[in-house]
Image 1 (cartoon, helix red, strand yellow):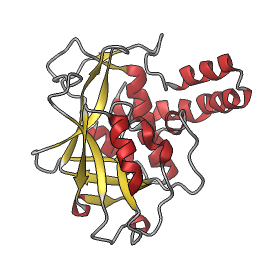
Image 2 (spheres, one colour; image 1 turned 60 degrees about the vertical axis):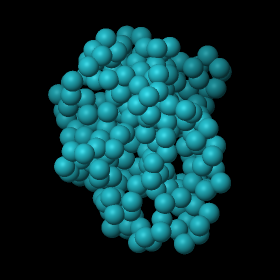
Image 3 (cartoon, helix red, strand yellow; image 1 turned 90 degrees about the vertical axis):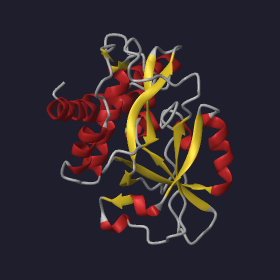
Length: 250
C-alpha cells in the first residue's frame, strides 16, 4: 500500500460475518504478502484471514519516492486503462480502526472505496455475497511531495524491496495452491515498465528485507526470532527467489 505497504495491518482482525457492520475490508498488494515483512511489526493474530483477490479498475505503480531510504515505493492508483487490475489480499478490520489507519498513512494518501463488483476471487470459498460490504485501499495523493512521476529516472526501485514484493506473490500462490495463477498475475500487473531498478542487494536498503530482519534479531538478542528467520531464508526464501527468477527473468 502505501508508504509502508500498509504496515498498519498489525491491527488486522479475523474475517467475521460481514453482516456485522463493525467490520470492513482493506486491500493490501505489496510487501505485506510476504509473511516476515508483514509480521516484522506484529505477529498475525490467531484466525486472521488473508483472501487472494483481483481488483479491477486500478493499476500498480511505483510513484512514491522516499528520500530518506532512497527508494520508490509501490502504490495503487485508479486506472482508465481497459481491463486494468491488481491482485493482492483482503483483510477484515474493525470499522472504528479506520481513523487510525488514515492517520498512520498520513496526508500523502487518500482512502478510496472499491465496489464489490470490481472484486474477483481466486477461490470460490472466499466469495463475499454481501453487496453492502465496504472495501477500501489507500492511494497516493498526486499533490503530495512524496509523489514522483515515472519519468524521474534518477528515483529508482531498489531490488531488495522489489524481491520482497515478488516473493510475497509466490508465497500467496503456494500457500493457497493457486497453480501459478496468482504469481502469473503479479508478473502481468507489477507495473515496472519505465522505472529504473537499483541493485542494492549487497547493502539492502529495504528495512524488511529478510537478511536485514535476521541481522536485527541477532543484534537485539532475540534468538528465537533469529532462528525462525534463518530457517525462512534458507528454505522458503531461497525457493521463492528461484520462482521469481524463473517468472520475471531476473
